Every structure is written in C-alpha cells, then in structure tokens.
Amino acid sequence: DQQVKQNSPSLSVQEGRISILNCDYTNSMFDYFLWYKKYPAEGPTFLISISSIKDKNEDGRFTVFLNKSAKHLSLHIVPSQPGDSAVYFCAARNTGKLIFGQGTTLQVKP
Amino acid sequence: GAGVSQSPRYKVAKRGQDVALRCDPISGHVSLFWYQQALGQGPEFLTYFQNEAQLDKSGLPSDRFFAERPEGSVSTLKIQRTQQEDSAVYLCASSPLWGNQPQHFGDGTRLSIL
Image (tube, rainbow over all chains, first blue to last red; front, side, top):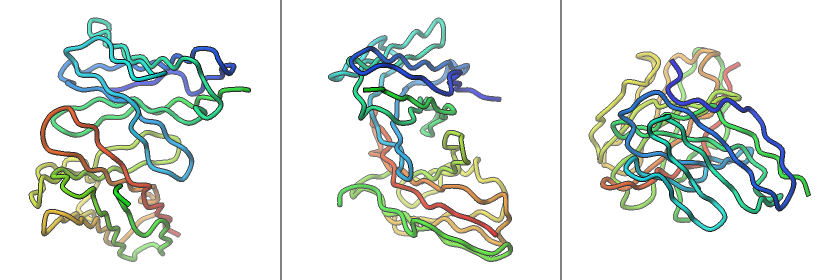
C-alpha cells in the first residue's frame, strides 16, 4: 500500500522555465510534508517543507503547495537551472517517521 | 563536518556474514532514524530512536536486523546472517525533537551481499 505516490518517474524542462513536480498521498493523518533532492551516491538533501495547516511555503526559487482536500502536494521551481537536475523525493510525516514517494528524476536542459 | 556521518560508505559481505553499520548524527539531535533504500525506490523507514530509547522498530524486516544507540548519540545497525535481499543503501537521519524540523540525512552505506 503506497501511501505517498509520485506518478511521474521523470520530467524534462528547459533552463529558465518552470518545473512542477507532483505528489499524491492517501493518509489524512500526515502532519508535515517535505521535499528532498538527491544526487547519485549522496544522501537526500532537504529542500523545503510545509505544515499541514498551511497551503503554501516559498523559499527563493522553490515553492511548495499543499491541497489537503485533494491530498496533493507540488513543488514549483522557477526559474529552473541545470544544477537542479537530480532525483526529487516528496515525503510525509506520520508519528515521526517519514514515508517517501518513489522519486521523480528532473532533467533541466541548457 | 556538521552533518550526519555514516561509515563505511561501501560494504561487501558474503551471504551469511554479520555486518555493522555506523551512524554519527548531528550534534545535539535527539531523534535518529534508519531507512533502507532499494534501487529505484524511495527510502523506507526501519527504526527510530529518541535519545537512547528505541521508540519504533516497526520497519525492521526481520529479527536479523538489530539497532542500538546506547549513549544517545552514535547508532549502529547490525544485520545478522545476511541474505542477498539485504543488499541496499542504508540511510541514517537525525533531527531535533520538537517542532516541524526536517530530518537531515547522511550519505548512506551501500551494502552488497554476494
């Protein structure tokens, strides 16, 4: 039973354009949501998070949106840069532990 | 460095051998987590410590897996009588206890069982 799903395995965008990564979840008890970025042979690096009581959080080029009624989370990156190319994981917290999606590989083309 | 440190980075063992993986969390972080990541998948929760107390071990796949954090800082994940299906990257993360604080991950130990 996959409680957190990232249905797009990969995404390719042009440098300077917007990247939108999506995530769906099923458990309404999740209280905190996070996005991590991962390069090969490295651990996940924290990017941005949002509490379940908010619907938007912004940090520089990164914005996370939460739609609780739809149980949907998205990450917007504007403008996208080639250095953003990596695997992105969404995660949801339940009783302390994180439940991760399968990841989306983002490629930003120069 | 100030981040989570894991050792060894790579471990190759023969089936049936015991292995021990080490995690040094960020100084002062009360919470420590172990995750297992299979190829092409997201990390999956194994176990959680608050200081030296193991509060959740619901993700440990079998009784061959054992974790400890005896002094509330460094943690060791031990796998006994390793099997090929244990091959994965084992990630450690730490965080402060309270509030909406993210977990910070180490670079993991890549375990290969031959």
